[in-house]
Image (cartoon, rainbow, N blue to C red):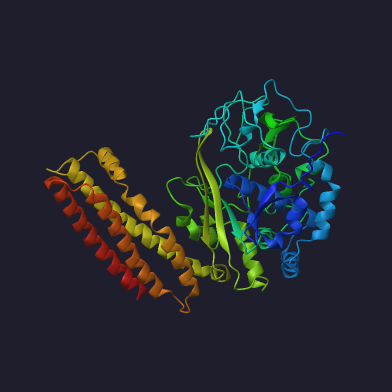
Length: 515
């Protein structure tokens, strides 16, 4: 009898239960137990994001279509359509089999390349070939084996998060769909709520609607495992619909199963994604670029995601579009489906890459009090708070600039701009300031939402004072360790004087505007 590992029945998705335990579940049990699960978990946020998108695709396909009425019934019944999804998964069980000969899950049957790759090629956080990560020293000629459950998680993740650049056995490698994008997920109190909060409106007659405003499509939109004739690796096309996009096969892969696990895989460019009209992904924010075109927002390595919170939940503007999931979740709230007491938040996942190498990947979770969805105009409060923080950062920056110039050129202050900037950076003042603001900012967001006043003047005034304290502390820490002689003492005095003058001015302006 041939080996079998169907993801429908085999445990492979790590989930956090309401009891605080982490256990692997099969696809069927994830849906049956969704209300008792807090979230999908994994050390890699890229894996978490990819597994959740697979769950969304199965949920949407087994339901058939999606609208507010369907989501409301599921929410009220605390059931994701268990009977339908179970029948669906059982029907397609063979297509979810990792080891199936004819149609192995998320692989190209019979696909081979001249030289196989280490299995870790499928994971950006592992090292393989040119994909070197600091402190990960696995050797390409003797890769560690992984079990089938881990191989399945890698397989799903690589289709969403694989870097382009370089040649492959088919064609040159291009980016997978989520590279360069900031993926935003609305989290509920359990996985059932999270799935429904991120399920956008979908009509099979208009399969591209979640991705664009396209007219009815003649194409049949189905997930990859339902495709009877897999495409030849290396071809390029546009998606046929949202299900096609969610299960996009950006890499041609075939696992090589050995008795002791998976060590090797055949790997090359799969189907190249062509996008001709945007925006596309309903879980990704967009903004107008310098050429006047809508472009997906990506993670900024120099800026924590919370500093862009207002743009993620505000109403659409001429130059900014929050994820479409925000509008759909708002509709559930306005329909009365979501209760006001729901403990919700936002999770932002993304990576920054330099050519074919990863610079950083990140997962950030921020509070999302429902008041900001119920009345989206209140998001300007968050934007106001963030602008105040940026303003105080500019004061701190000015003080550090003066100090650095005085140190480098005490006689006339005409120091080289590049050298001044380098000295400022080494002082670490701004990064310390921003690093200490994240938690107070989250508390402010929740306090403003809980305010009974029509405008949170009190909370924002306290925020202004907090910003001054944090900026002053960052400046003092940066200067104290350097003040060892007359020159550094004089430069420090100049910097502190400028800081206090500008801070007082900012505080007065903010106080007047908040009165």
